[in-house]
Image (cartoon, rainbow, N blue to C red; front, side):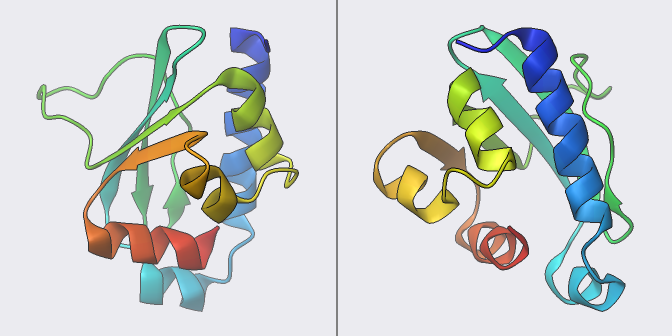
Length: 115
């Protein structure tokens, strides 16, 4: 099991990876969404925001307003790190039940094009 710090570092890396996506691709496939990432084995939730400019850094404090995240990801710590490092394919992880994503169908399609 990975630590909270290792998960936090993986999410920092994920933000950097989103920054590398071509601006034109982001403009086509990204709509502003709030994102939560629940690391189930550590009982911690990270919150972020996806927008045309990229992905904001994740924080452990939920955004103000109390509105639930538009895209909710649930994953165990080791799988989060493997996913960000490119060692775990998102589609296979979803089909295998290792990752759960609660989002609209349209959001799922957009995310698939970006990851």
